[in-house]
Amino acid sequence: MSSSPTVVNSAGNPASNPGSNQTSNLDREKVYQWIIELSAPDTREAALLELSKKRETVLDLAPMLWHSFGTMSALLHEIVNIYPAVNPPQLTAHQSNRVCNALALLQCVASHQETRSAFLTAHIPLYLYPFLHTVSKARPFEYLRLTSLGVIGALVKTDEQEVINFLLTTEIIPLCLRIMETGSELSKTVATFILQKILQDETGLYYICQTYDRFSHVAMILGKMVLQLAKEPSQRLLKHVVRCYLRLSDNTRACEALCQCLPDQLKDDTFAVCLKDDKSTKHGLAQLLKNIETMSSQANSMGAKNPPVQQKIPL
Image (cartoon, rainbow, N blue to C red; front, side):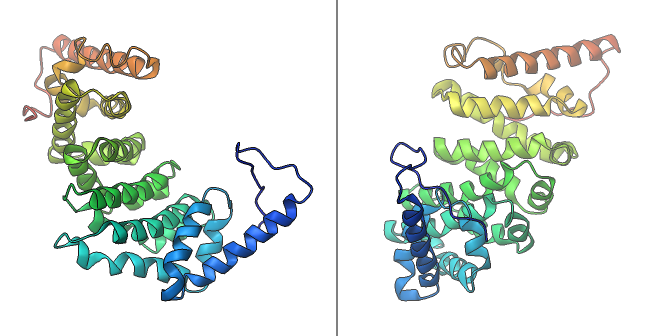
């Protein structure tokens, strides 16, 4: 097991007091005790809360959780135990907080290089999908969806091929698309980020552009988001939407289709104020429009040949 984590002070800097090692050891002993307490139903809730607070400061918490006896079973029990409250929707704030603490620990395991592969091999993300299927806008459900998305977001953030290959065998893309259409701004942002990371992978881009149905579903939802963002601007969300479009334009067939269905709001000054201080997104949008203009010019020079994807994407 790796060495003890560095103790940090309230400013986030390494503590320099002579007793820092002793404090670290005391903290580690507490962590060990809380992990043990996860296996006991009567002490699990308090242990979940305490450990979720430590997930960013105890650097090797993920392998500690993964390799300790009964811990992952206890976390999965917390998730499965809440299913009856999800459908029909009866989830309380207390139930939501408790299961989200368990999800926070799963996110810790998903983020760690030592445990991520085993996490995928065990198909643990699939246990979260029932939460992503929920549509209730009540706060306990929104919190549950957002925390579940956080686990998937932690996986894709690593830019590992294994992660993308796994996700493409699941229903994560349609789940993210539905949340992108109907979720809160924060949930939409995380779901769009996940789609963006899938698209950035060559396998993911090919998968989405492989059939008209897949591409048109993605293009339709992105188009709806642009129309909504024109009414309620969000620089953070717009950034991910533009990056999704830009990556789609790297695929020849998708770029040809975008010549027909890219929303006009991305071609005019609708978002000029929103992007005034976001040089990166402005550059990405300019590159997107350049890619589409180049594709249109090539099509015209070839005698306006019909593009492979001929239908207009319905918005």
